[in-house]
Amino acid sequence: MPLFYSILLYFSYLSQPCTFPGWTAWKNATTHRAAHPFFVSVTEIEENTKEKMLKVTCRIFTDNFEAELKKKNGSGLNLQSDAGKAKVEKLLEEYIKEHLQIYVDNKPFSLDYIGFEIDGEAFVCYFEIKNASVLKTVTVVNNLLFDLSSEQMNIVYVVVHGVRKSAKLSNPESTISFNF
Image (cartoon, rainbow, N blue to C red; front, side):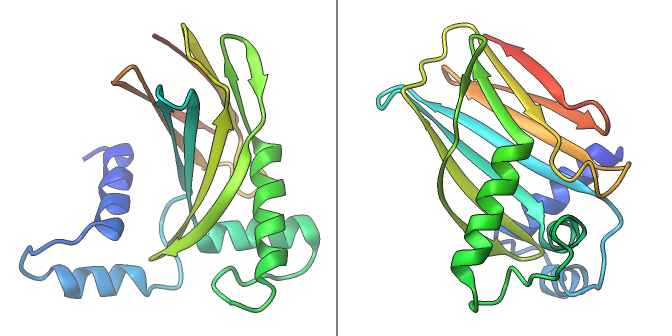
């Protein structure tokens, strides 16, 4: 199975319940390791036509992101700790806004931070883009964690008018356009 599909499968296993025999032992073995073998993030952008907005969700491995923040800021940070949650949220918001830009029909839009949650080995960060009606094109510039690893891959999903498209951005490739 190609690495791209293995990664997608891995993230889906972490976030969805499963009754497959041996599932619990496998999940515990994979979610309590010190490290994982790949560097990946998943970003999903979904159009909400009723509210004329885009919902943006970023899923990033927690240990990779903590290492990136340590490299960038020179000090360690534990995303899973309740201590200093306001500081964590500020750093998350600033970092993602710096490394993820979204254009609709060649017009840049700013991300409005909603919040984040920890989900297994990853954290999920939520944003909105208000007053965005997609007519033809969504362009995404995503270089999340590119400074951390030359092996970083960022998978991007865009759902517009009920049509789902996807792309894989491998470091240093950081820009993709989706036509609808």
